[in-house]
Image (cartoon, rainbow, N blue to C red):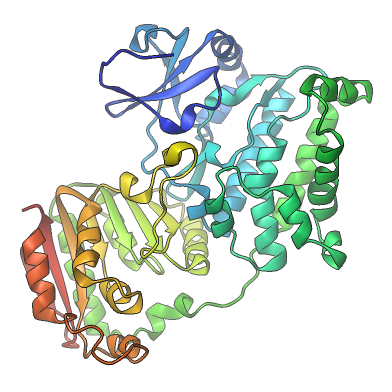
Length: 470
């Protein structure tokens, strides 16, 4: 349904369910419901299981508002705004597993109350710091007798299969999910799980049997499948048993520890105690200088500086390339009950692009990242030397992550620093003639107003605090 030009923006990722659509009105998140969606909402809002999940914070805050907010819709809901929208291919193993377990818990409680979810996608979940939250209120519907879980295939392709890849084969799942918005197809999984691998936990039922059933029913209509299941005695109790079985399977899965150089980086990076103290003080002063809604910590590693930033910011997004490091950080944040720091897996030299339908269904990282403060500590040399990104473009990208008037806190690692020398040793001589402190300062001053700088006691690293567009 069209909405008049009132400054209301359609959410590009919400078009797949014709019964409802999500919109943005300033800082508000609104959901328009058609006749079927409005009917389902009336039943859902009066169900105790739903109000309990809302009170527990497991479903995003939702309330009805005046229908005139979105002309042409039968009912309108307002949702809480998630601090930072992320995608499943930016999550670590433990994050994806916890998201899957929350999805199953919500489905189990819905089935017990006579409801189901029409979808099973990982994209139906987001994060408040280290806590997952279910956001697709429009996917709930009353359960019909003999009805299979319509979201099972999506759940397998975007949640279960990636977990099986990582747990059984030690393959990072992030590239697989990033490649296809609909997740990993069963036929791809079958090719990976042949021979003895066919018998690994979860594989016989959810990979091979699932694939065989899909092939067998490829020409059958949804109505035919429902009729067959009903005739076979498929019931809510069987659906609940299936959900509990998947839950038990996922709880047994864990990330295979393949080891990572970056897990011990804070211990092996060579900072002295004085260097670290100076750096921590500089970062804290920069973040505390003005109220910050969102801080980006790029190259966050174990989250040391993200934790400092979280003392003064509403939300910190801690970006790190190594999935094992992000997984360790997430587990620590979860144990601490931290709700202000969201860790994400991302290569800054290859950040998440726009994806899905027309390249806009899933927004790129650059489109989502408009921070009040950007921390780029010991990052620029990895991009400029390690990844051959020209220094002007490195600074262009760092600046682009901040809103106009936001702050950039950046560390320049001098060419004579041991880490820079190690990176340069693997490159042809003279390939980076412009990687110099004076050139870095010239480029930074051309893009920002430098407020202060400090050379660390080691003498080979300098910190800068600058205002973007100042």
